[in-house]
Image (tube, helix red, strand yellow):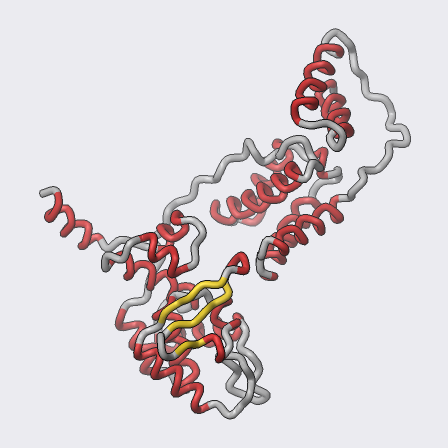
Length: 331
């Protein structure tokens, strides 16, 4: 009970004191109440918090939007946090580490989801409560003591040369062929692909500027085959839409992420190629680039990763090359 009282007092003083003063306040309160009995009375008219849970969540989402998070990411954040906060009948400032641990444990048991899924929720909670702490809405993030959840490292598949050629050979229109070639040769994200305009493509230098995560622009490069197929596709177009990729049917609207995903998934089912999706092209490019000796820092720039650890997660290492390198450098 004493700890709750001290925390409430410090929470109330948070906007008015700096960190050093808050530490002194806690020490003073702890000393003064050491030999005192604290009992809980029936709640009187307690003033409501300045900001409610939903208001704080809206403010957090707005902050993340300013930082450059996509609408897809923002929706994921908001949906996840609404579920978490909705499971507690208390204000955010009263949520403890034990509350969150219990939630994660019960969520995993109820939904039978993977450890990776639970760790994603933990990361979102960590981001949210860290923001609350930085903005002085809470004293200390309750997620600090909830460590990263260990997950089994799964070697994710990449496309074989045969699978890529199968997809190219079975394209029934020039748009799909150009789209597959562009994904395979640049390693761009599907969100970057659908945002591209015709004016973004420089055929002379075989490159285009994409608008990636965090509102960052970067150049990506494509090969000669992609250049030919992309030109053929654009020459066949009769619409005036500035988008690089549009729907095949009138009124030829800009292609969306879901449209690309559905088209590739249907193609994979037809050809018997497992797990055909846009992101697999990106992982395939990273794996092959590293496998052929491209410096990891350059692969990082190519993929637009802010952290090199992310690049390493995308790439698998060919075990035959490890064996050959062992013989070359060690054996």
